[in-house]
Each structure stands twice: as C-alpha cells, then as structure tokens.
Image 1 (cartoon, rainbow, N blue to C red):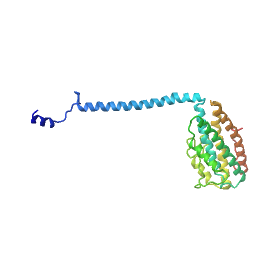
Image 2: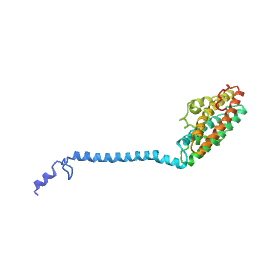
Image 3: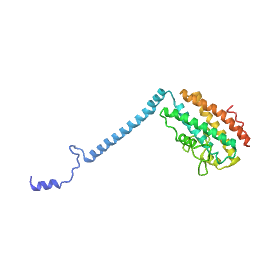
Length: 257
C-alpha cells in the first residue's frame, strides 16, 4: 500500500453502512432500538400478567385455602378503622367533660372498641392482610390511657388519622372537621356533642357487621361480626340514655331494637 493509499483510507468519510450489513447505519440503529423497546415492553407485559395472575388466581386460591373471602377481609379492615375512630372519640372526654357518668361511659366505649380493634387486627395478621394504620394508632392511644387528659393541640388526641376512606357519613364515620368541632367544646355542650356523635357512629357500625353476619365465609370473622353487632346494640342504648339525661336530643331511631 502506497502512502497515498493509506492517507486516502484514513481520511475517508465514515461509511453509512452497518458493519457486515448492506443496510444503512441509520436503519441498523433503528432496528436495534426497536429490539430494545420490544424487550422492555415484553418485560413490562410479563410483570402485568404476573400481577393479574396473582390477583385473579393466586389471591383467591390463597383465600379459599385459608377459608375467607373478600367480604370477610373487607369487613375486618373497615371495622378496624371504624372502631379506631370510636377510641379517638372516647379519648376526647378527659379534660373536656365535667360529668362523671360521661367520663365513665367514654372509657367503657373506648376500651371495648380497642378490644375489637385488637381482635380484628389479630384476624388480619393471621392471614397476612395489612392492618390499617388507624388501628395501630388507636391501640397506642388506648394504651396511653383513656382516663386522663392527653396532650394535644386543642383539637383532641388523634387516632385513626388515616382512617378516612369511609368518612363523611359512610358507616357513621365522622370527618376530621366534625371531630375538631366536638373537641372545641367543653362541659355540657361537649357531652351532648360527643354522645350524639357516638350514637350515630355506633349505628353506622351495624351495617358492615350485619352484612358480614349474612354473607361472610370465615366462621371466625362472622363470629367477630356477631359479637360486635351485639355489643353495639347494648352500648348504643346506654349512650342514648345518658344523652337524654344530660339534656341532649332524644332519638327515635329503632335500628338497634
């Protein structure tokens, strides 16, 4: 090779052909990008199919093997949140109520609601179903004590701050604004507002419990729902009687009878 030939090769413009291919380099690069994109899409599709398999086949199969259904797990999850809010309401009483009977009833409601949260959380844990954060917060609040005033910012001690997927009139759940309104009151005004809220809250808890009793699959979950419904029907009568004795409005709701 002459020096002239060597110089010509070194200075020759790059080829627009793919190595070992008759196609232009741009076409080669496009093909390579398409193959990469195809691999990525295939991987994503595999993930989606695996998720659908898990939700559509493996989860129901796991539920069937464990003897529970979606209705059972939905009831337990919702009821944890519902009872967590009852604990929160009961914890408002110390420092706001001057009535010994109201304070005593608040403790009873709070402790019974916390006990139901524990039972339902155990049921969920045993089946590897996540326990709502509201339940854990309520248990911590109950463990801190329902007979003494807890420090707060004036709007009341908070439990169940994450339990608002059913709030605003569904199953008797109160909104944060409604709870703040109750927490801003004192003495008789507070007593009436708290007891009236507990009446409506308890009535709201009857629906999911009764639905589980009628349509649940897991015997333990159905038994928990039955126990809850029975307790609600007793507790709400006590709350209504006390509400009337402190000058609150009478209730003509006969759902618990």
